[in-house]
Image (cartoon, rainbow, N blue to C red; front, side, top):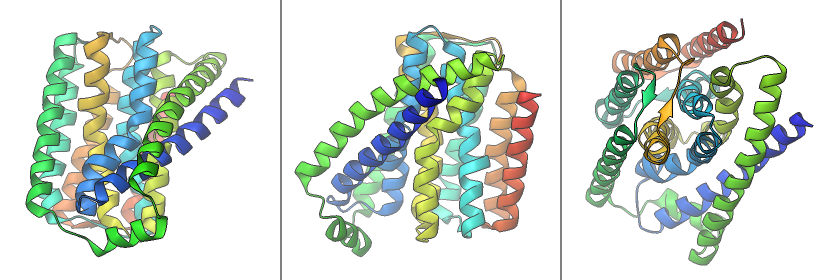
Length: 310
């Protein structure tokens, strides 16, 4: 029965996040925002919504290690699984503005989380601090959007093809939000039951089963984007999601419920930071990630999972 809850919850999370992405992107596209900035803000926030709902629910139910493990594991999976799969499908070039601007910010956010979690806790004050950083990031991105606002032909084609009007877009946003809550309830219930039956700690459950499940929207959006060669939105989505996971998901969660962890240690935090620095270095020196490097990232991620289950 636990597997039924897990799979049903994951399916509902994926469908609900897809509707939320569709509604949010349609609303943003009508304002003339570029696809890259949509990926860094609207789509990134929408695809991070499963992490937010699951982490909030886990913390509310007294499972802080699942709440934190979900974010740490999702940030690792976004690079080792999601970006790797995109690179295996198609070469992912690094936009020079993103590589020199948003990507270092992602590394800085991960480094900050590394420091904040080093003592095994995340206080309410630290959560509020992360929320202030979130507000600053969003305002910065929307200021860039105002400077670069343009009526993109690609955006017009998306709207014309989908026929998504304002009313339907808001309906998608509302239904997606409700679906995310219900899906997170079912998914978390199934993941915890399965993990406990396997003798896993709550930290490992969060770092593996929960984080991979909540990363499904990013994986789905990225694979579709890779097949369609929409590489700008791919990189923007991944970087934006990792930033939002830290600033928004943990910021909101810790602001309501201070988090105390014991089993998420230096190894997990180092893998998260190491992946971020590695990807930044690759884009700086090579300018893109191709199939070979994608397979390498995936191999490192699989090795990390083997280490957790060993």
